[in-house]
Image (cartoon, rainbow, N blue to C red):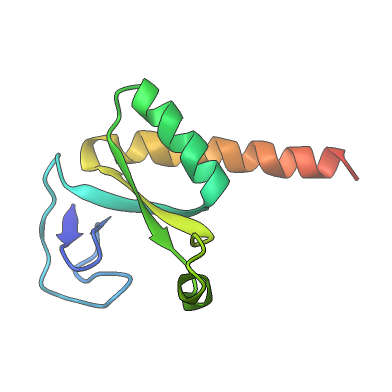
Length: 108
């Protein structure tokens, strides 16, 4: 598995899928890797749950500059976890997304 130090993305490709950079290195177990963009409320809850399972994560504020200009919190986060936990957290997000979709279908 390769790692882009610019984007913090772990990938199997020879170049970064986000920035196209070809200068990648082998990923280390302790590298923080981008998992997903999540909204603020889900991100805060997810961080608490991950920390309860002793999984380190970082939430980086992400969004439009309009909120920054008005000193408002940004509307979403970029979620990063260590590479050793990446697949597990992706599975959690996949299951959460499936649950959300099923729930929205039931409410119609």
